[in-house]
Each structure stands twice: as C-alpha cells, then as structure tokens.
Length: 200
Image (tube, rainbow, N blue to C red):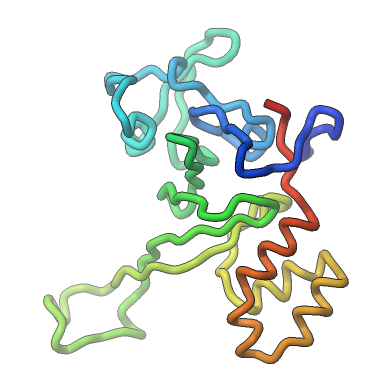
C-alpha cells in the first residue's frame, strides 16, 4: 500500500488543520483524515464521556461498523492512533502517546520500561525485588517510513540525510550544539518537507 495523499486533494499540515475525532486504524487513514468515528464504535462506554476514546483504547479489542455497516473487531494493539479533543495520540509499545509536534517528523515522549541491570539504587523501595524501572524518554516518528526512533543527535543525523543542505548545516555544528539544536532542526525539516494530509 502506498503511503501518500494525491497532491490535488491534499494540503500541507498547519496548526489550524482539523483532524476528525476518532480512531485511525492505519497511517494511511491518518493521512486521509479518515478515522473510525466515535458514532461507529460499538461499546458500553458512554459516547458523551470526555475521555471516551481514551477509555475505548484501554480495552483489548475495538468493535466498530465499517463504511458498509459491517461490524468488525480489531486488536487495539494494531491501531495506528486516535484523535481526541484536537490532540493526536500515536500507538507506541502498545501505549498511546500524545504527539507534541506534528509534521513529516513528529515528536513525542513515552514511558519506557528498562531493566534494572544498569540502574540499581540500594536505598530504593523494594530493592532486590523489582527487575525493571520506568523512564520517560523522547522519540521522533517518521511519517514517511512509519518508524519510531530515539530523539537524539544520531537519529537526527540519519533523518536529515534526506535533505542535503540541512544535513551539511547540522554536521558543521559541534557535538554540544547539535544536542541543543535538535528541536530547531526538527522544525526546519518540517518546514521544508511538510506533512501532506487530505483536504478537510
């Protein structure tokens, strides 16, 4: 399946773009702004609940009616994401995380479970019992490849290779300056390579 939106039917993403509220089953549904609408979701959760979609996405499966009115069931873990109250949430590690930056490259933070082999606090509660700890980390999502990477200097060097001028500019910076300029270059890349979405 080609991941794109035809030029004449698309518009570059801007802050005033309105995503329809609902569940985006795939990246293509997101690009086409074609979610499963709240009214098509079959659930006992009250539809007028403020965090209706958040509640729905905490279930193991989602039941909905497709365009033909056929009832379908999907594992929530396979869903791309959802839009609720004008905010977008991306499925990463079976958790839905809010996108802080939306563009060809999206930014988000997510809690990751890490083994304690590299982190042990003898004064910590339950020392010697827990084998993992949770850590909030930053990530970047590349909408052109549907892949998630750690948001760091190495990743930005890799992603900026798609734009020769930006890549050369970034590589001229000293190591510390690169680390401090990650968001600047994320924004520069998104400005030069906008995310194209279906017209509203």
